[in-house]
Image 1 (cartoon, one colour):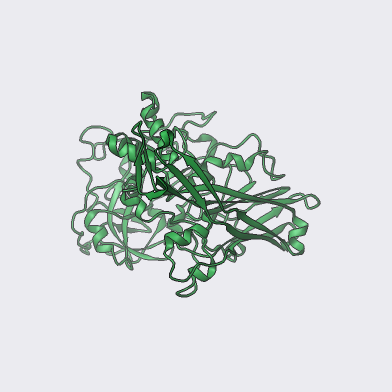
Image 2 (image 1 turned 90 degrees about the horizontal axis):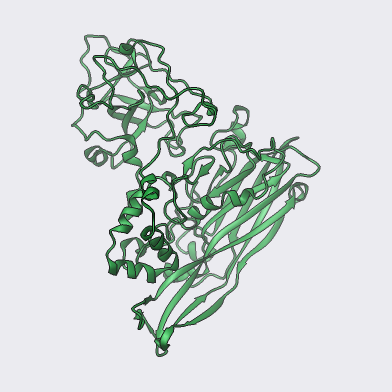
Amino acid sequence: MAEALAEGGTKSAATRGGAGPSPGVFEQLGAVADAVLYEGYLLYPYRRSSTKNRVRWQFGVLFPRDWVEADGPVTAGVSGSADSWYQQTECLLRVRQPDSARVRVRVRYLQMQRKQVEEAGRPVESLRGDDGTVHLTFDEALPRECEIEAPLDELLRGGRTVTVSAAAGEDVEPLPDDTGRVVRSREEIRAETTVTAERLCDDLCRIRVRTTNTAPAPPPRTPRDEALRRALIATHTLIGGDGVEFVSLIDPPADLEALVRACRNEFTFPVLGGEAGDTGPVLLSAPIILPDHPQVAPESPGDLHDAAEIDEILTLRTMLLTDEEKREARATDPRAAAILDRVDTMPQEVFERLHGAVRSLTPSTPTAPADRLSGVAGSPEPVTFSAAPADRLPGAAGSPEPVTFAAASADRPAWWQEGADDGLSPTTDTVLVDGVPLGGGSRVRLRPRGRGADAQDMFLAGRTAEVAAVFHDVDGSVHLAVTLDDDPAAELNNWYGRFHYFRPDELEPLEPAGSPDEPSAPAPAAAPARHPSDSETPAAEAE
């Protein structure tokens, strides 16, 4: 899912210097929040018989406490892929208008609904109507949310607790021509959310939002599918306010790093919402790991695909479904039917836009001759990188110059020319880092950048690894493919070419620079030359 949401965006004209969120700021996050809501449930027209649906609703699931802890206490983590009975968000908030500061919290989740098809008063697995429409017995889900708004002063004095609930109920839908009926039933959802604040200094507070399932627990050995009827599913929280702004927990200011590390986020991962450049008017705390300022890619043609880079894959797979598979998908869930309708009627020009877009390139101004570019064999100096201001990114409004790439030379031609990569060898090329040539077999320690690093890379900081290959991108940048020393699947990953990728300035050599006559470490067995993005494609989502 992190792959499914594009980072960044231009500075919003509605940004008000931290005075509070823009009107409807929660609604601006609606498409992103919905992608979170339906992750693991329905981002593709899954069928009842498909493997994907054997284990449904894997993220942000809050069960009654006694049931989920029947075999022992839950272990808190930074995201919500493990079942729990609570979810806790802690974040830092700067107070810009002390006299009128207010905090808004919106808790969103799914309530499971059992859909039972009946024929002549008897439960059946499926039923085909006279018009050929198929009706299937299958569990659905209904979106629910609860909103809290309170003055910051009240939260500092003790907080506020509100009931989060969804009523039990049953709906009966007769099928045409008296062929049968569909009965949809729901059990009551009962939970509560507590919002508190702690003042850390005059203009800085720590906010805590804790949502707890308070429903009576089913018997300890109740199957998970049955216990889900009393659970909050895909639980996530939006936090905003007036007269306040939030601090990034991924990339905090240096003077707040210790306070950020003290925040205890359990079964959730909070990131800044809104557009890049906004001063933290809203926070999205999700059970999956996302970057700050996640956004749905503009190429995505509608809700409930994966909202960005793998839309093309899912669209193609949807097109390849047989007529019988499409009938089953339509009968599984009305949202699946809507995805099928959108794919079947998608104009060619919309489909072509799904092929992808490059958003990460920055203008390049070479400062050294081509034969001294990073990664060229014999380069006498370490790798250096520079960043461009946001308003100079390719395609940005007012960008003063087109994108340029490092100049080609006789020994290093441009990749985009046929045969240009003939002289490159990922398993034997090296790149200098702190005077040490790093290549296949080199030992390194991982030091992800504090600013702009991938969120999941940050969890690997300080780990040791072995370099498997050196890759050169068409824009002149270099990435090193590594396997973790303590990864039990390292040998398997190396065999089929699935690695973690880091820039040279994110690696610390563990071996000192040797003499020129010292033999280099033997290269590992050749692995397929794969682009870094290959390891990040969530192929499982397309199943």
